[in-house]
Length: 284
Image (cartoon, rainbow, N blue to C red; front, side, top):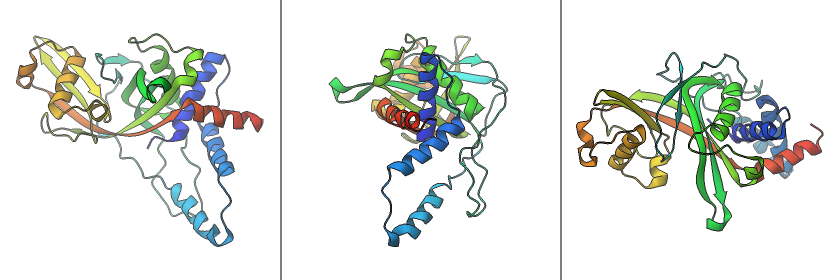
């Protein structure tokens, strides 16, 4: 599943790009984040030491994500928000990998750590004047499984700098940003337009209308955040794809629907800044 370290890495990549420096690697971020957490946690009492050790080991046993059941031969890049957008194709990403966690030799054998996944990186602007309201600032991802190191690095920049709905993110905006990473899993062909659950599934639709092919996607949290019903979600998604038909006749369009799930994590800039200052204080 997506982790805080994944979000920190995206912040690190964007901040380094804007500063003109070389970013830390994903493995370095994961290692330093674990050290940072340990440094900020109070020491357990003597009689709690065994339990704390057991909990630490258990926390490392991340559940294996199911292999994505549908992947195209080219990388599908898509933006995901309540705004209109259509699917487009992007270049293949070279195959490399990074281990997500160091193996614990004292732990029982587990499934291999996640090294690649379809993913989306979302940037939001947080407004203190409006109670911390989050406004979309950029969101682009891919349905083609990506090695996490390269996928997160690439889409952290693509979503921040190349989302055509927005101007590129500038350095002065960083303090107001929130980064969310969603790793996509469990792709399934839906039995029909309503064969999915609000808050659980994201949707990827495709359809033909008047000789043209359309397609669009919403991540699992979009419909819930907007307060939409299933029908409202589907109509909005069709509009996002570019459909201009009558709203009351949307059901007459034959939709191919793929449902999927997304394991999401998010981090605000303040958390990134505290961790980064700790890293710099350690001379890393």
